[in-house]
Length: 481
Ligand code: NBP
Image 1 (cartoon, rainbow, N blue to C red):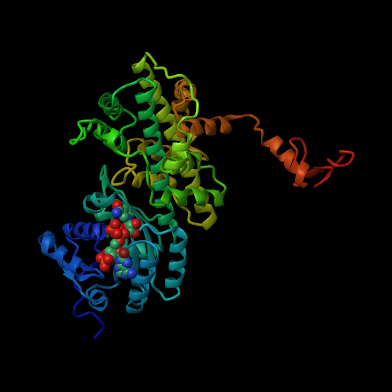
Image 2 (cartoon, rainbow, N blue to C red):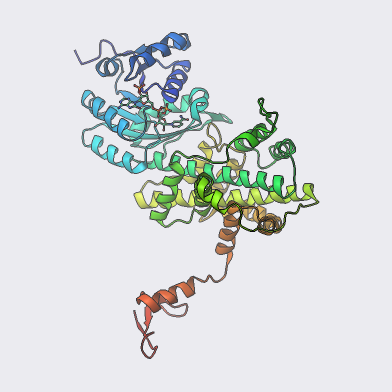
């Protein structure tokens, strides 16, 4: 008898039953998929089955051997443990128990280069390794996340239907699709998180400007965000911003936002996005500013040392309602830039690693389940539907028109922030990126000339092919480079 065939009763298994794994297993069970459950510390497995056993068919396993034996073939084994060394430890533990054709699905937040390494090692043993981005936090895992699986097409054929079944749905379309081979899923999830950083930073700046340029109280700004959420900015992040700003701290009676320490933390996926973008040479300045803004907020000592530095005399804008409209436009325009940069990075990563990622499909699966879910993503999908080879989202008809409409307000907001001494790095860098791409000529020409001057790095000319060097230390004649 084949190993495990007598006991194989689960369609899929989840090992690692902390918040994410537990909820993912429940989601699978609720959708009628018998699910084997396992955790290094057995008490988590027991409590899951005790508390939620009535929700579906759970097959608890105490040992890795029992867990693997409980899975029907080809085995689908989902790993939901801490990213990094724990994921390698779990793979090393389970891989020897598997057979060719089986699948290990890593649903943790792995770095895509780790996923590439693991996929290659397991492929040599005939095991499919499916690095899968999962977004939406613990609520998403339970009620329907956005799922970004990488790996082989063969593994997606066996796994995709289950994942699509438990993913969020928008207009009946699952927020899950095969992203591409090896690290593609985790790469796209990483950029998703980077975009999330940028989106949150822009929202933070919008709030800060309304608060300090106009002097609006938090509760009134909550109303502004509620109104925005009825329009083109409709999104989960705008919605929760209104909720947070309307919330009063029970202990002090103050706006909740005023009692939270203003030092943002990060788990690292934003930083990975920027590091990877640097390697790929893609300017994701909106994401980078967002990551740096969080870093700057956390440097309490440096901030304390600099606090007394001079700034402009305090003043307030009189026309709060008109300025709020300008901020809405600046926010929409800056958001277009942040997404354009993120999608540029996805296309660059896809080209570098040969993944053939479909950007329109990524916009489609981010419409629900994940933190950046938004009406806006329908627009991005439409842009790629209209032109699958679109070079930059900025030139899509809808976005180009929105940027054009916004630009006066956008410039006014950035200028106002500078004049009043209110930091708005996200709005500013987005506008600078927009103007950089629009520019007929960039000072990069001067940069290149300087590089040739001090390092003989050569330059190309606007009027002739080839590369050239000027003899700066000599008679300044030009020679071929
Ligand atoms: P954690 O990231 O807190 O990891 C805890 C789990 O890892 C427990 O099941 C723990 O087992 C297990 N584990 C560790 Br730690 N070391 C292990 C080892 N050497 N061998 C076996 N198991 C080990 O759990 P989480 O917050 O549920 O997240 C799971 C994954 O999902 C992570 O990669 C995370 O980045 C990702 N993710 C999380 C979220 C979120 O909102 N939390 C969202 C999206 C993705 P134990 O019980 O025996 O200690």
